[in-house]
Image 1: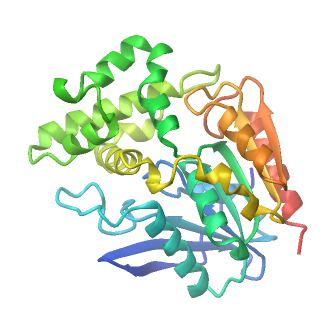
Image 2 (image 1 turned 60 degrees about the vertical axis):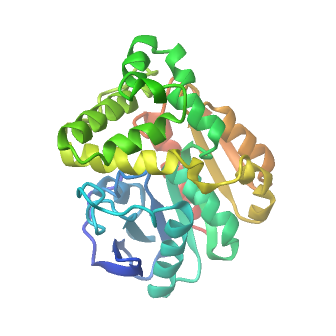
Length: 317
């Protein structure tokens, strides 16, 4: 990983609907443009993302997606309206920022739900994308959401039973993200807090499938918990507003765009077949399945592969 760096420019982009999106740029002002697409949804683009890039080669753009704290209004605020926080609104925000910064094409680096957004963005606007690097690949499908909110209960049955029982009994057999989303907007702050904690406890459980797993300390912050849980359930309750299987089905639109997909074999909450199917359908993608590593970039080999891909792509015009 490269040393810590600070942005040389930042601001709030008015994207309409009362939303202002935080952005920052660091590295080389004349370098190869790259956009970081964080996951969650709701995690925010922390400073660690900057360290994947050689600051002498890259012009690095980080964005806190709508309602992610530095972008306003904050999803953690009691009465915030999230109806305009959808996959298509976020993609439009990226495009508006690209034009605002005068960038012709940029590389995409994304992870987890950020991979879903990155794929959807690249398929909608392939002319704006130079290369794509994704790890912990997801497609946001209903099948995946059912897997992570229900079928993973076969791996962690006791923890999943607590997660399921966090919603009213008459909603336990339905759309669990939607049931949680209702609780997370309840007028009673105690109901919201319990729902946020229950949701994040499950989030921190279903990724616990590899030897180097550590609890996510971000979930210790009650404001972050509520923001994160509201945004995840907003997107998952709606299967990311994507037709089922569309990202693989339309991967031909990515022809000519080099891609690197990196996925841990022990990422059971986001099974490796998601990345494999995408690589099979994407003519210019290379796939790396990493033994003994799980969800996220915590493993050494995953980090090495990200850095290697960005180093190679940094040499391309």
